[in-house]
Image 1 (tube, rainbow, N blue to C red):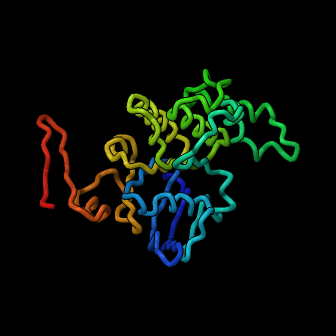
Image 2: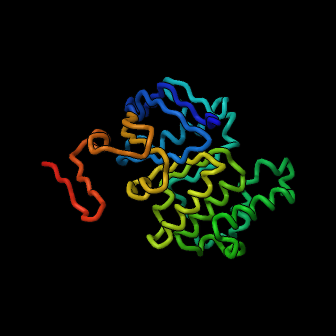
Image 3: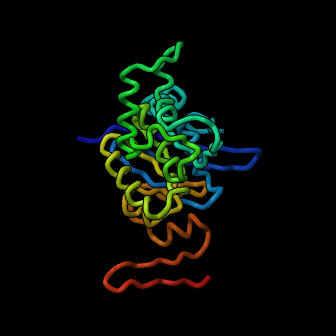
Length: 252
């Protein structure tokens, strides 16, 4: 049985102040995809996520999310932005932040139902932070705060999860467990992960896209040095892992 299409981008171009950020981008995301997007800073990765969310309107091209416009389908998307700065003294706990993921379901009087609370609790358990439920968010570590933000996104029970550099503030010891959680989530949520961590992406995702204004590659998780050089605009050093790890160096 073939998987269903979640996102379709057709010939997408985005311009900011006469500067082209995305140019003629085409690709598809399906229900069983765990897609990693890599590329240099300023290459348009965050902009691409905002196009899918309907927060940025392309200069040209067509965006379809779950068969509708991006804006109409936004409620089915969980999004964790690249950076979030907490006021360490702001008195809000983990439970209330995660429950915000159910805000649009609470109605005009904003009372959360038992269904909303169950969804929030499930998200806490999934991200393994149920024990932090009553902790003040501003007092948590960067990695714990990131888990709270992802739990908030999961509480909305999304069909698509967009993560922008989710391990940027996560220490190495927590990163493996974090990726394992995402690996489990991919069985029922399409995931798009923007990251600079090429090694982690190559292990966990099932498709990789290389983006630097243009989409240089989209498909399987295999990446050649030619694709990386086209993306990063410089010679690339490849490290082969095997019985005897070795480096393949090019002139620079």
